[in-house]
Image (cartoon, rainbow, N blue to C red):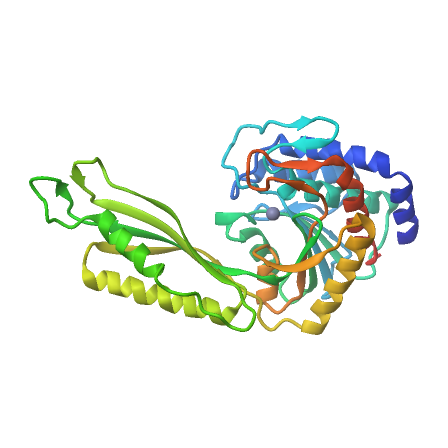
Length: 381
Ligand SMILES: [Zn+2]
């Protein structure tokens, strides 16, 4: 049956593509900033139900879950694609189809992947296929930035001990992420008495305190652990009142990342040392708020992960015609991987401009994405 369905999809690929493009357009019209995926989640649930899906639920984190044969199973494979985008807009996004490309903010990351996964789920439902083990589809929330992986965290918690493999459809061909980049993100607030720039000259200045910290954090070389990659970034700095006011307030957003748990820990030590020094200098009152923690992989069965990676690369290369390389990334996979559950992030389209308003997806790349997702999913039926 699974093979028949794969053949059916392959033979009707043009129609399935059209259907997917229509779904992408419908999804793009529904804004979904992280933490505000309500409308898109509701749409996905209704769409699946209209296709005949039963048991679809929206959980407390706004994940849309469609479990197939998961009852009383503890060998569940999870397929997911995230609903949220990096854009804060709550008005519908512009969408354009010029016959060659689809244009819309978020169209590739991750709307195309989501539409492809939903379309495959639809055909499985229509064909009434029964899975060999539990299969859980998730249109999950909060993958981007300050979503802080809330969606996948909720799924892994609710299905604790029952999910054994995770495939996240996210990103483009040529890249398959099987190593997690962990990160720690902070908001650092500086407060001083400030004052008049002439009359109170000599009073403490919050911008000075912030600049001093940034300077010191940037004086370090990143730690190296094996073939790890570690980075840091002061991403946003704001503060002050006017040119003739000694700054009373300043705020800094700072992060560091690494695909090595050990290096991440070293970066935390550096950060904490410098914060302690800043506090000691007493250039300002300093408050540190942790705004994001994404863990690295820990205790994953390397053999199993290598097998999954190999399989995915083979399937991706076969259908896309592109060479596919492994990489590190910060995605929904971070959570299962930090729990020792193997997870890979598979790209299923081609395009450009992720996280920009100029994002586009090549329409001709969609059929191969459908086949990749279909083959990966259908092997469980
Ligand atoms: Zn994404």
